[in-house]
Length: 502
Image 1 (cartoon, rainbow, N blue to C red):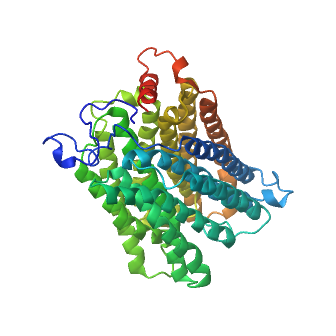
Image 2: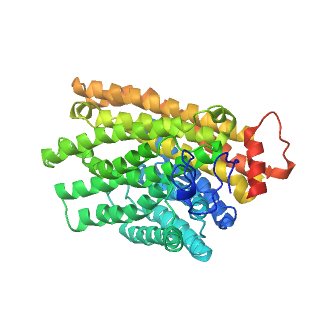
Image 3: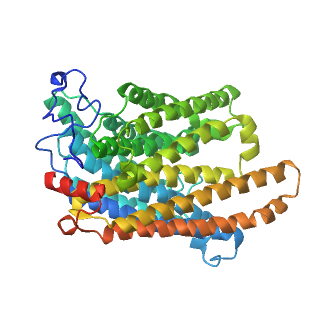
């Protein structure tokens, strides 16, 4: 199953050693292409994608309420559930657990059968996980936080009982999606394509990091040691869960769309192992100038710089994989979202390496610069990547083509709104830092930040509209057979071809 016809490779299974010299190796340089691919759970994929998108609106609404309170503190201040601390926690947890987990799982359910030529372990188990996660973890967590039951752990504000549900859910996802790989290795000699490396990394590493970061600090290792372990989860939620699954989409969509192999397998290896080695060490850079031993702080800063260089290699490799197909970035909407996600990825990673240094931390820590940085990662890199992944697989799991005009509008509205928010908050952060360092009264920095905070609410509202346009593009999708192939519309032609071969 492929979105576009491949020019060089038509392998049936694991016959890498039979590929002529100089030809791209299936499973190494690009995903396998099977003549009779394993079935994909289309209904389950659509359910995860749509649930994630609608829950994204709820999580974003929590964020808008939180942002509005900065310049209008009395706004929705009469009900306990809508106080700043609770809406902020529900926003952060919602983006990660409600939106991104559903989006990533939708793409993983699509990708794993096509990467392994094996079905997932059980579609019935998949539906059980779907309801367990969205009702037990997401809705349950939001309700408990809204009534005041939460914990003071960054990226872990849902109460401990929800943490147990999350661990069960993560392990169930791992069993469901790792089993096809185990069966593949038992039944056939076949290499793992780079997208699979990142998927397996996220599925196996995340439950361990979550347990360490959520349970050891409050119950076993309080104090500075607990902060170190908490920092592990704070950064690994982004670096060892969100990042690998976003790169799974990039490494899958680009060769599937262009029909060309990844530029360099060697660079793929460096990028993957660089992430594995350097990223877990980054978390402590959140605690510079703290009682944590200085050698641990400097090690985290060095690892952050190394991680920034690693990301440069990854993004160069992926952009170079578009050689000869650059026009598709304009004409093929999924690739446009993926391209923009990679742009935000390299930008936020280089910024992260720069701001990890102590001289910069001394200035920007606790300012809105950090809020801009986090939105560039989760909204720019991760969300745009999932949008690209959904647009890529939607014709193949539904037989319907998303409305191209609405999808294009979503891209431009979201890009402009997010860019405005990032620039605005970065300027506000520098302004706050300047006033704090100059010794002005703290309240003066609050007054000076008001115009920027209003701009943040306006740009956030525009970003919210961009999300609505994306959902509308899916709900106004038309059967592919009813769409005329017009004006070299690569996206329409590719979708038709995909459905014909799917």
